[in-house]
Amino acid sequence: MKILGLTGSIGMGKSTTAAMFEALGVPVHSADAAVHRLYAGRAAPLVEARFPGTVRDGVVDRAALGSRVLGQPAALADLEAIVHPLVRAEETAFLDAARADGAALAVLDIPLLFETGGEARVDTVLVVTAPPEVQRARVLARPGMTEAKFAGILASQMPDAEKRARADYVIYTGEGLDAARRAVAAIVADLGEDRPET
Image (cartoon, rainbow, N blue to C red; front, side, top):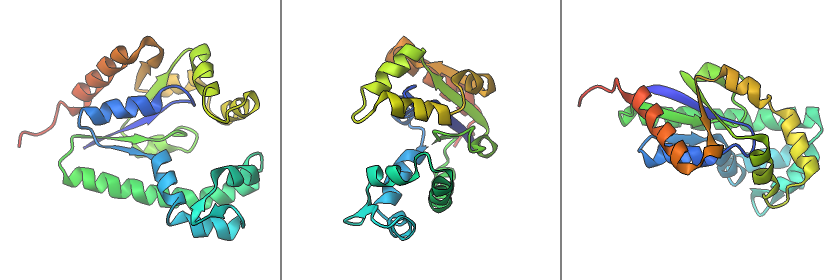
């Protein structure tokens, strides 16, 4: 089974692209979705123990937690030490299940793939990208997003040009959904072509 790492800076169309792989029957594991599940489950008591008052009704309050860790490298490192191993365990279980199901290809949707060394866990990397003005419009349309927040997020991410330079595949999501779907289908055909006959 081949493992494709899907990444891209904020607002580049990663979630939409991941859904296109799923629509073609490719199993996809989203690190963001895993964090959401963990914040409502196993991670909640661990986060509350380190950051008291950030859990409400058994679920991590992301806004409250964000106010405690954003711009605080030591606090962020503590949070990552709690969450990353749990996400990695979910990722491993996902890959084991995909292999057991006979999948030829599985996708790991990892927002900070290069920033966290995630490329070492995948066979190939796909970066989704869009023009800066498209990215900016998408991100600023999100609820609660501000110019300052957007600037802070961009500063924490590897520049888009560097991601594209390190990728095996690049999809330009600013060219419309149909173009992106065709690009996804071509990648699936390319990476899944050596699937054994069953």
